[in-house]
Image (cartoon, rainbow, N blue to C red; front, side):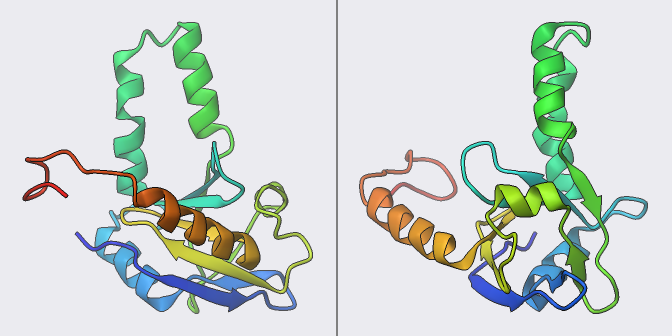
Amino acid sequence: MGVFLGTHENRFDAKGRVSIPAGFRTVLKAQHMEGDALVILRPSHTLPCVEAWPAAVFAHLTQPLDRLDMFSDAHDDLAAALYADAYPIDPDREGRIILPDFLRDHAGLTGCATAAFMGVGRTFQIWEPKAAEERRAEARLRSRRISLPSGQNGGGA
């Protein structure tokens, strides 16, 4: 399974389309299941960006919902939070997508000429470029205080 790596900045065209970076499209296509959308876009719960999920990874994220009573408030709240603002997208032949207006607003991309695509492993994020730069700097500082649990993925940090 490939992962999304690096940060790439692409321009919006005159029709409001922006290209998913070629390396990201390669990972999406490798994980694509016939009949699913190539990518699921949704607003981040905690950050001013758009999250982009391969359909199979998004399905894995939502599996815990199946363990909740489907008529419970907890199920309804989580389902609304995960699904109501999620949009399946298939890029055109050139890898371009159009972000729904509310997602552009959420990420501060309204009126921007470019978008930053930031790889974060199993998913990627779409940011206003300056905000992406600030997020990466903040993450580098905060990550210095994080230790990974030992015994996970071949050892500890």
